Amino acid sequence: MAQLPTTTLARYVVQSKYEAIPERVRQEAKRALLNWLGCAIGTARHETIDSALAALDRGDGARHDALVAEAVAQSALDVDVVALAQFSLARAAGAVANVVQVPVLTTPASAVRALRARFAVG
Image (cartoon, one colour):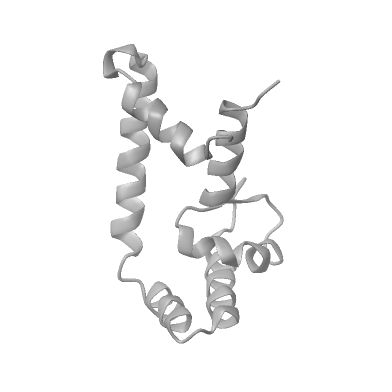
């Protein structure tokens, strides 16, 4: 029976040695974590986020997606890409793509692509 991707990834993480990770990769990981943390702190109490999450809590996914798309349309004025970097935002990718002229990336889709590339057979 084939292993689940999560099992393979977990085994890879557990067997990895910090010292074996190149310094540049470690630095980039630290930078990415700090970037994510700054974004999380900066938007954690934003009215739009609160409203969008409340819509999801009520089961109104369409309203959630519309609120996210509206916020992106208002703020993504000169960007090369939009990254919906929280799993709860991934569902709004279609609505966001309708209001911007740049690629829209999501954390789940990016993670799946990375895992497929990492564990590709053949």
